[in-house]
Image (cartoon, rainbow, N blue to C red; front, side):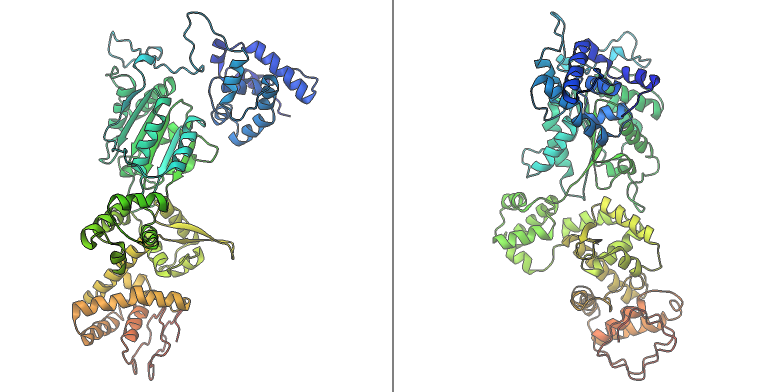
Length: 619
């Protein structure tokens, strides 16, 4: 049984007191207490302070999650408590089924517990849905002005540069979920996350249009040009004050406090698109650019402070504050967007005038992971270059080109060095890989914790997909086909250039093939990585003898530079020579680090391997 101290009772008694203005609370307490007695056959015929506070919150339109936060309770626990207690008492009293918390106010009003005074404007629920700014102590208001942005001039919208979504494909499930979070659960912050081109912006506009009538104010803004936090806050405060507040607070902290007053006094929807524009590149996802750290303060305060409004943001990366405050039953939620399903993605291809069989269409959609923008870019190229024939395009065997490459280049440039390592090795492994194997691949050695952090960061960036190995009961990680092809192309191009110039980086950090891999994986690595490197060299250097000499020069000239370093350079060069069918008889490999060399069938007569480190090689 939950015990209440006198101070706690007094504290709870001050929660949701606005219910007194519109409801006959004493009669309601008495009748529900009697229903409680009938339900549980309890001697004590009264409601607890918690039950009374929850009842007042519910009839004022607050969700169980919001009530839990006001009462400093765990939301999921309070939900269970309500379903086992107060909801049952109200059902007994009203003889109706309470299917959702939002039904409580309606059913009790139908039973006559709500007060209706002649000549009094009674709101749909007892939240103050008018933006009567004059009720807020405001030292910043221009002299002589009193603001009453009441219902007749409410439902104000400012769509900024919101895109046209008159043509919109799919996302019915996502919209239903988001609408429920905003309208029923009254979430304070909702983050729409996903890789570039996945449709976050379009979804944010469609969502805002869908819930527009739930709010007194709706404002949509893009952060693409990275406005300062001061500029954004000034814009929001002016909009919510009906352009009446002109002498704005001077510090970021007081500006945020002022904004929160408006968010409490009216129901406001703020949509911030391209939030990742204020996040930094080159380090772990979710951190801020220099000078933009106060965006994190804004997210933190809007997440932990009770208010009546909602911030929706879209981002390629999950901000750290969203990660910290979000949860299934918390007022901060995240929705990770995946690609469109086949039915909806086909609409994009049909609109572009493409032709193909069902199998060809499904294969094209799978190649791009259902990414709407990537499909539109690909469809344009298919129409222009292949007369709209999907079959002809697929026969070319490549999906990374033009706009798709530019899209992924922007994502890749934001990665930290360790995230780059994880991306390359996930690509090289060609199939879902476990954390331990990734850790073993990376040089120099890194901790498992750092690998896990990078994997988490890459999932926040939507560049890595997490799966479950049902046989071994472990998590594995992989990439969408178009991302894996993009990473393969980067590796092949980089390796080719390094062999030609002798300036080595990628060739020592990553293995072009893994001698320890399963046969079918190694065959795939040879086909999509090793052979394309040799093909590029053949195209650039023309002669196999020149190619062979280039590789040999790198092998011997770099001996001293890489003699004491762990890495894959020598293993890669030897694998390239072996694949060129070069006779390795008499080669001096002494003292070299030779990792992941696959030399089965190679002629190694009189080769010198004294003091060579042949880690994970196969002879």
